[in-house]
Structures are given as C-alpha cells and as structure tokens.
Length: 239
Image (cartoon, rainbow, N blue to C red; front, side):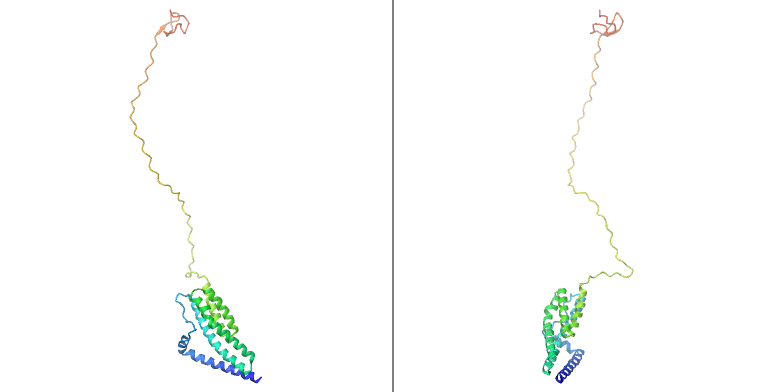
C-alpha cells in the first residue's frame, strides 16, 4: 500500500515538473525552433488556398499532434514509474495510453493533414472525430485539441449565404415570357413576271341580218315575208 502511495506521489511530481517546464518553454521563442526540428511533426501552415475554417481546424489539429507527442512521453514515464512502484493497474493504463497517443501521433500526417491539404475535408473531419474520442479517453489534452479542430472544420460544410446590408432585401428577377418566333423558312425566289400581252384589234360588229322581202295580203292587208305561201293573219293564199 505504501509503495502505491509513493508511486502516485512520484507521478504527481513528474507531472508538475513537466508542466512547469512546458510553460517556461512555451513562453520563450525556443519552442518554435524545437518543433521545426522534429522531422515527424507536420508544418503548422497549410496551402494558401484553404478556407478560413479549414485553416483554423488545421491549427488546432497541429497543436493536438504536439499534445499527443508530449502526452505519450509523459504517460510512458508515469507508466514505468508506476510499474516499478508496484501500482500495476495504473501503470498498465498509463502505458496503454502512451501507446495510443504515440500511435495516433504517427497516424495524424497521413489521416488528417494530408486530406486537409488536398481538399478532402470530409475524410479529415471523420478522422479527427475518431482520434479525438480515443485520445480523450487516453490522455484528455490531445483529445480536446482534436475535437476543437473537428468543430472548427464543420464550418466548411455549411452553405455560404450572401450578406445584404440592413434595410435591403433580395429581389427576385421578374420572369419574362419568351416571345414567339415563327419557324424558319428559307427565302423563295421571286415569281417570274408574266409576258407582256400583245394588243388585240377591235372586234368588228356582227353584220346586220338581211331584210326579208315583204308582201301585202290582198284579203286583210297584213304584210308578211314573201317566202310564205299563205297569210299568217287570215290564211288567204298569196296570189
């Protein structure tokens, strides 16, 4: 029992020592050069074409990867100290948590930063959620950074609406009915002009009928054509 209490005090002392060293190191400018010298740590700046939400999410993911590295080292030391101190359950948990933090640290460049820099935001968002939940269980600090990065990245998937000044509203353009256009017909050649008409001579009037010879009836005195044998009036024969 005394060995377990002593191991816990040793772990607390180691935690305080590393936290104080981390605060001093972060306040100075040496941390920038130190992080840049780590070959397995990605660059904090992504491509310039990334949207603002992706840039913010990438920054939190970068600090989450840094936290994973330090938490893996701290948990490894705490786990070994607990194992040597006789606190085997806490020692095993610390070693497993150190292994999880270290594994996710090495997987972050291929699973999060590479999809982000290539525009595959949905894939990077899903991996940030998975790694954030795992590291929240095994380490807490790295998981918080990764979950914040996941939340920041969700702004990329929201539709961007156009902002209008106060007092103005969007006016929908009026619909104009399309004008009817007759079907295209090829132009036809003009009809040939009719040939000029020849002037015609005036027609001669019909000849007047010939006047028949007339004779006078001796009986009634009526006149009738000479070719008739009897008078059409009284029927007397022509003498």
